[in-house]
Amino acid sequence: MDKIEIAGGASLNGEVAISGAKNAALPVMAASILSSGESHISNVPCLRDISTMGKLLAHLGMGFHQENGCVILNSDNITSIEAPYDFVRTMRASVLVLGPLIARTGRAKVSLPGGCAIGARPVNLHIMGLEKMGVQITLSEGYIEARASRLRGATVYFDIPTVTGTENLMMAASLADGMTVLENAACEPEVVDLADALVSMGADIKGAGTGIIRINGVSSLRPLDYRIIPDRIETGTYLAAAAVTRGKVKITNCRPEHAEAVISKMEQAGVKITRSDDTLTAEGPDRPAAVDIKTMPYPGFPTDMQAQFMAMAAVAGGTSIITENIFENRFMHVAEMKRMGADIKIEGSTATVKGVKALKGAPVMATDLRASASLIIAGLAAQGKTVVDRVYHLDRGYERIEEKLKALGADIRRIRG
Ligand code: EPZ
Image (cartoon, rainbow, N blue to C red):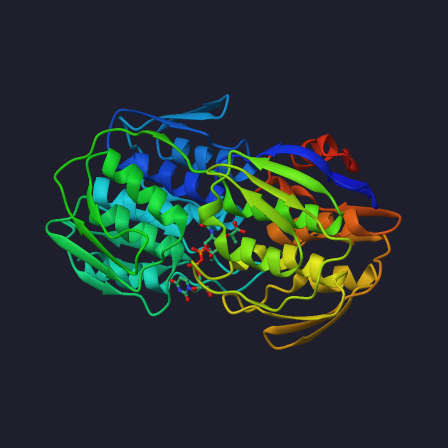
């Protein structure tokens, strides 16, 4: 298992280009199932999750290859309708093939994802919505078995705005008979990107980005030729890295309007931020100020930035209250940060973080994708050496992070394990 070693204290300066958004590329890749032909998706990051999705689509009979940030998929022949447990347990986003498979073939057999480090993460809302659209679903031996002679439009209300639930149903509804209305739908930019991709295939979708999305089913769709949006969470991660190293970092190829909540909280923490359409320049303060955050569905503060923000709070001047409202177990990074000297108390879904003057480098372990990013940020700020183990979590969602940080002046290297 690879590790990443950081000697903390360097101030980050220079430019970093943001890669395509993993959480937009994954549903857009799944959308290619909806039509036959060859799809081209560009600005796709080179990540483990992307290759896992590619392998899953190949398992379904599709052609897949990725070169120079472009994914090419051929969906002429779907020869299997099964997404086996082995794929789904390594990447929950595999569940995104459920809606497209039913819409394309009338059948799907997709392993239930099971829980993960950050929470139970059920898919009951995906299933509820598909059943409203006329899909017969049985759960047996850990699999979702779905069958539908014809999908019909329906009005679906989500108790919770689920990102991949909204995406699964938007894809299924694109080829259903009649109108589907998704209410209390997720508004994330990645949902909008998928809607834009589906419209480029010929789908009729209105309202993506709001809580009510209307999809008027069409009889067929054409292959994709689409460019993925930049990754707003990678953007926030580099903002946090600048914030804790008194650095001056210009972040290019980004979409500031997708990161307003994070930008606002960074400015409250004393980070000086200037922006253009596709760049953000962040100047870190001598010491971040303490700031309270509550994670919420978009456009609220993203849960995927909670751990990275906690690394900032750990060295802030004052006490920050961080409330995690989306997942029930997304504080796995806290124990590791406390090994570095952080002063954090957890009570239920709230962490009270009393900033310390300096963290101390230590050997720590990554537990999930964003926790691993937060430990890298803590290592950049710490005195001494930090070694982050199990960085395969990191490789799922961050393209060449140690190269990008090294280019900004970080003393960081990967130890091949
Ligand atoms: C997506 O996960 C993202 N993944 C996650 O990013 C992100 O943290 C999450 O949305 C929230 O923004 C992808 O897009 C591939 P949800 P998703 O369904 O869709 C509950 C990362 O780090 N829920 O929006 O699985 C659920 O338990 C990953 O890149 C149900 O109860 O999240 C959670 O509490 C981590 N029943 C809440 O809704 C359901 O059927 C939001 O989950 C579905 C969800």
